[in-house]
Image (tube, rainbow, N blue to C red):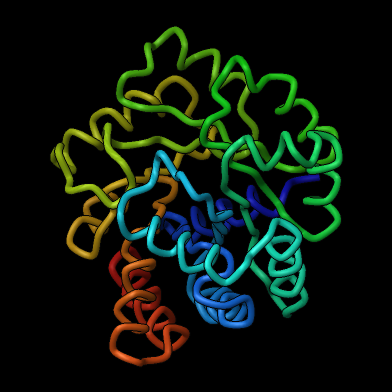
Length: 266
């Protein structure tokens, strides 16, 4: 039986476009508002990444850090993240949901218990930023046992031999970090170069769903229309910040932002 993540990619490929994958931090700026935002962007996104806020998010730039700090200031705990996902998944035609965070949250909960809880509340996939291959092999197998997609990460510095092994061990989605930077960093390489690297990876296994993250903006997103999927996060987190600063409703703002992004890739 194919996973919901795989089915989402299949649908997008039939429509001859990349999957639009959105990222927002759970609990930003409140638990209630967070659920409303997920429901709102679900109208246009294909897969939703939900970030677990961390007080030292090493891979994240300013915009996502701001989102994390707002959520933590609101007292958000891991149990709240699970509840947010569970409530979101109750809506009709809810999109696949990937929980993204750091290994500390998994370790404290216990690996098996964490994965079982993810499955119970409707999490379809996991990205654990600081759990690289091959250290993640046992955790990845455990995810597979409970039908939760474990997303492997690749970067421009990953050697070809290592890449082949990671791709072989991957599940239904691989995340290509397009540049060596924190999220939301200024694009340091041209879209053409990113696509060149991307296509080299696709040649290793054309059947794997490979998405591009880091540096995807309103200006650059159309350049990557030939990819399997695109992750937009910092832009949306900034949208929430701007809305709050201007005393506007971030739910309405993000719905429009994601709708506009979708238009650029169809």
